[in-house]
Image (tube, rainbow, N blue to C red; front, side, top):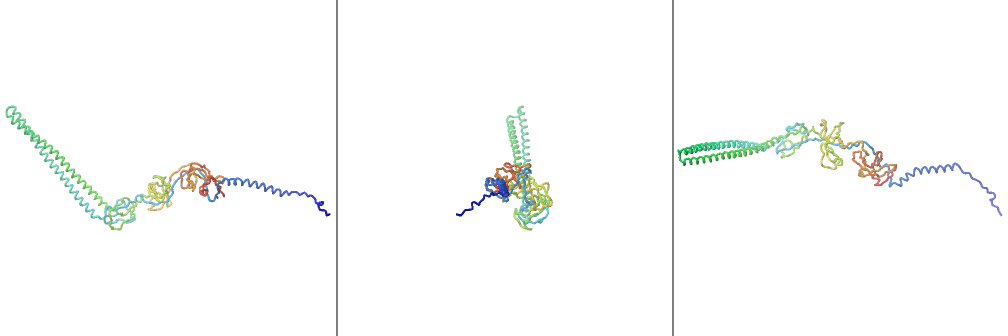
Length: 423
């Protein structure tokens, strides 16, 4: 029988390697530390609805300070007064100026040749002279008739007084028995007839005075009406000399020399260079805040001038409203028509206002919420936005000074309540 080697085996004790043990302990500690750092991030990751890279977003901090609302736009110089001359009557036109000429107020710019109108004025003037003669003749006739009626009244008055004396004499004689009763009655009848004649003469005199007065008045009214017609024709003839209504410069000529034009045809325009304004196009969203009299600033060619809003168009064209800004304190001399200038109109200025940089979040949320960023998490927070300027938005509720919010790129959040901002 063959024996095994069990009698030769010995139990040998193996000592543990201390370096290896330290490595295991260090690894465990490092794992704990890493887990301690990663655990909050992992927790936030699982608590958020989605994750968006910060490179796709824009951020801004809520601040407190001055808030200025203004409009900045490019405008062009236009004449506040730029009248266009029209032909007041048809005829051949002779131009007395050329485009670009400097003219004074009431200077003749063009002459319209209209023999028809001149002849009509002469005819109506002749009619007016004839009516004046009729008016003067009516006055003479009225005085003549009045004189005749006055003469008849005076004669009737004398007759009445004579018959009254005769009647008194006959009555006295009858009392003394010198004349019969028949003579007294006859004298009485004669007196009565004289009084009636006197009454009629008085009535005729008054009636003739009224008739003469009415006839004179009718002649005078007809003459006055004719004089007005002559004055209007004289005005039309005077207007055949087209005069400049302002001091300025001839702009555009709409006709050629010696052209025959119809009534109300355009002839030429005059630009008043002493009253220039700047016309700007304002976005419709800002136009409702504009008002006549608002201050502004006009700049160009290295110069700055103060301005005031002088007019606002009531019409919206292509989403814009036209407004005009005039120079405050006088028009600069070096400006020219249609020159381009920059305009800034101040709408509002307040101090100590909570604001944040303007971004697309206002339009995307309608100003009802914003995403506030804390510890890498963007949280949807209800807010109330106020007025907006070109670069800032007023915050009324929901945010406080120092808050960091996402101002652009929130469309990537798709309305999520909490979003992780990854680096």
